[in-house]
Image (cartoon, rainbow, N blue to C red; front, side):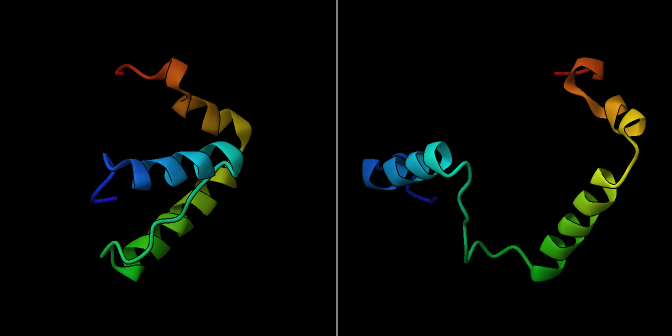
Length: 64
């Protein structure tokens, strides 16, 4: 991603996002502990009742 403005890099990333719906970046230097904490937080969030998650909708945000 350090060369995101290079067409040879940007094209396959965009293609993956469009066709597959996601892409994975590896060797980014983010510690595994941070990634695990993020994954755990996501699991806890999505386990919440719908009415609690609704508070976090973009439409309910006081900022952009």
